[in-house]
Image 1 (cartoon, rainbow, N blue to C red):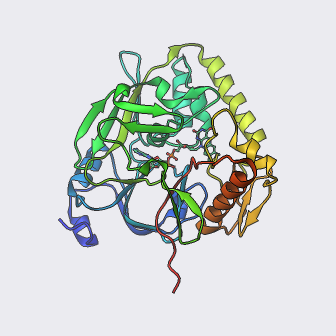
Image 2: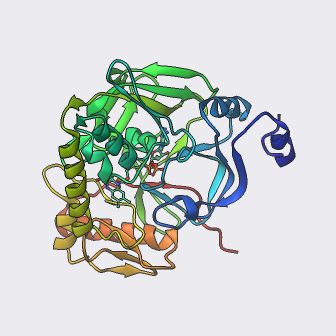
Length: 338
Ligand SMILES: Cc1cc2nc3c(=O)[nH]c(=O)nc-3n(C[C@H](O)[C@H](O)[C@H](O)COP(=O)(O)OP(=O)(O)OC[C@H]3O[C@@H](n4cnc5c(N)ncnc54)[C@H](O)[C@@H]3O)c2cc1C
């Protein structure tokens, strides 16, 4: 089967949604980014398996959840984007007391589900506007909670569509970082740096293209939480959301914290100290409300945002000696100018 031929796709047994030249601005919380050559939202886990079996082994593949930690460049994505949000959405209470949650389930839904079942410890998921898959890939966390603290086992799918169950000890889990010990989930390039066509120095620790040879994507997990009081958990979720509204610029498109916190310090503190709050490039602005957020004021391009990231990083390094590393994943092609 040739995945490049739309007609042939339609004739297969695939039940998901296949799109061509899909604007990634629709799937990224910054609301920027060029098109994905091919874009597939599977109908369910079995459909995903069939899709991956059909996909040529050398096809570049990017997995996207809610795109709340992604900057897709204006030249778009060569290859295939797999959308998990709205696709893998099973969420169930198991007989052994664990919650089984599939990769496309949003954090807020998981937090409310746990509270409904009288469990505590899942409240922090409500503050993270991503899917379980994205939270596993990032080891997302806030207010003292981190995704992998609650993981008993994960369900992964290989590029060839094989399903496997893995345990946390098979991964190196750190601050906003998860690597599979034997294979590595992503080819991150270990934080090396290069100079982009824009002349800015960048991390190469941001590639989200799954290495065609050996890599796996998260499709689900079994999570464990303590027995607690559902009413208290619901109250904590409300409080946590109010805190977020008070401290984050949630009225404008953003991708949360742009930079990781350096050891024993805060990226936001350093950025503010360097007088960068409110700095703009095109439609992108360092938020006045939270210095580690960059907001799209309207009409920003991915290049505006990436250039602003570069400017912030260079200024902070020059003024404080601290090199900030991006937490957001930057992917895709630079826009070509004739
Ligand atoms: C307002 C706001 C507040 C935020 N606050 C926080 C916070 O408090 N703490 C925090 O940690 N983050 C925070 N974030 C960032 C973001 O929500 C998290 O990183 C989240 O985990 C991303 O999930 P996602 O589904 O959107 O992933 P995406 O942004 O779609 O993808 C992120 C990365 O995960 C990979 N990925 C996604 N799904 C899978 C999968 N199924 N298998 C393998 N890899 C996958 C992608 O390829 C990509 O590399 C915030 C973002 C916003 C916009």
